[in-house]
Amino acid sequence: MSNIFNERIEKYKKDGEYSFSFGAFPTFELVNKKSEQVVCVLLHSKLNKTVEIEKLIDLCKKKKIKIIESDKTINRIADKENCFVVGVFKKYETKVNSGDNLVLVNPSDMGNMGTIMRTALGFGMKNIIIVRPCVDVFNPKVVRASMGAIFSLNIQEFDSVEEYLNFSKNKKYFFMLDGKKTLGKFDFEKTDCDLVFGNEASGLPNFLLDYDESVVIKHSKDIDSLNLPISVGISLFEFSKRN
Image (cartoon, rainbow, N blue to C red; front, side):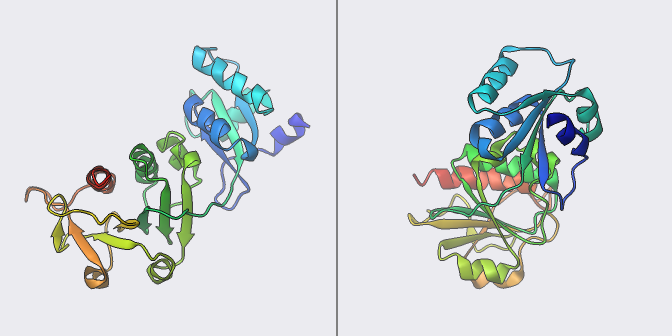
């Protein structure tokens, strides 16, 4: 059975049923948090059996997850050399829970997406809403950049800003270069809130300036804007002070 499945594992496809976690740590997070979605864990013959790898192997045994040694399969699907651990998992859907949301409108960079996921989890923000068109969150590059944080998050996608606005009744803070409030100069309301960010290049639509609360992160005039993951990180840090 495992050999038959090995022959079917090909490089990642956006419309495919499976995705991959490349690397030991993201794969450990996959097995630990989403074991029901794991198809198997692939190991390379050149893998050094470190303490971390032994923990992964023990966890797989505990969760009854198949471990397969297959250099050929890893070499075929890995996007980089020196990849010795791969988790193969079925894509899945999640819904955001009640509470605070991080909202990303049309995010387009895979590395940024993964970094934002990791940052959000680091500040205790476990709900992420994404407005399409957007990056493919299950692309292995996103999974790798998130260092497995994706497996601890609730992610829900919407087709438009209007659909998202109709869905969420939370207090909304739209982060914009022309925002009317300056981050750090006001207190976030102690209710369920959405922190909303736009595309890396185009930002948020102008009509949102007057929709609820618009916020600007002040920086020097030596740059035109902050990198999206940096903006999200600064904002989540300030937001975390509320509690």
